[in-house]
Image: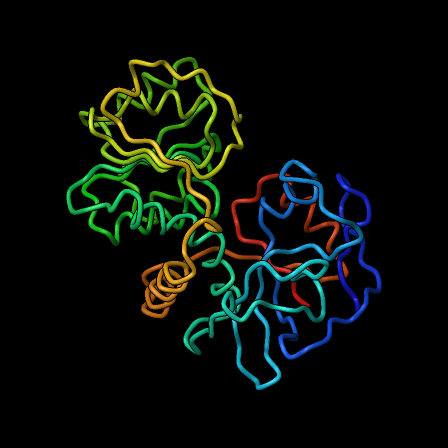
Length: 304
C-alpha cells in the first residue's frame, strides 16, 4: 500500500510503499488528520520512535463491515497517513451521518484538547470569564466556541497573528489580545475585567506567565501545549490560590474520551461548532507536513 513513512527521525515523511496491515482490525482510511503532535513524535522529542513507521495519529476509516469510524493512535508501525491501517477497537468511534469526515477528524485530537479541559478540568460555568492563550490555531478556535456553548460570560482570545485574531471574534470571543508586544502582562490585565476565572493555555512559556498575572485568586489554568517554550520562569507569588493542571488527551479514561467525542459530534451536527479545514492529497504529504510546521490556522486533512 501507499503511505507516508517516517524513515529518519527529524525528517519529513516520504510517500512510498509499506507493508499492508492484516487482521480483523484493519480499516480503509478515507481522511487522515495532521496535528502538531505528529511532528513532535517524528522529531523524537516525545521519545524516539522505531523507524520505518507510518506517520499520523488520527483519521477516518471504513471497517470491513462498512462502518465509518474515527480512530486514534493506530498500533505501530502503522499510522493514519496510509491507504489502510490497523486500529484499536476501543479507540474507534462510529461517526454520525450528519458529520462530514473533515469535521469528524478536526474534532478528534484538536476538539478534545479544547473540550476536555473546559468541561472536565475547569468545568466552565455560566458567567465565568475565560482566556484562551493561542486562540488563533485550530484548538483555540474550537475552545472559543466551546466556552460560549458552556455559558462563559466573557471570552478573550490571545495570540500573535492579528488577522487570525480578527476571525475569532466571529466565533464568539468578546475581545482579543495581541501577544508579543512590549508588555503582555499589562495587555492581558487590560482585557481581564477584574481577572480571568479560567485560562486554557495552548502555548505555555512567557504567555502563560503573563496570563497567570491576569487571573482571579481562585482561577483554574489548564496547559495543553508548549509552543512558546517549555520552561518559563513562574513567579511563586502568582501561583497562590490558583489551580494549574497539565492536560493530555491520552491520559484521560477511554470512557471519558468517547463521551466527550460524542458531545462534540452532537454539537457539530447541530451546527454549533464549526472548524475551518483544508485538504492535501497523500501524494503531497511532504507539503502538508511543511504547512503544519508553519503553524496553519486551519485543520489539515490528508485525503487518501
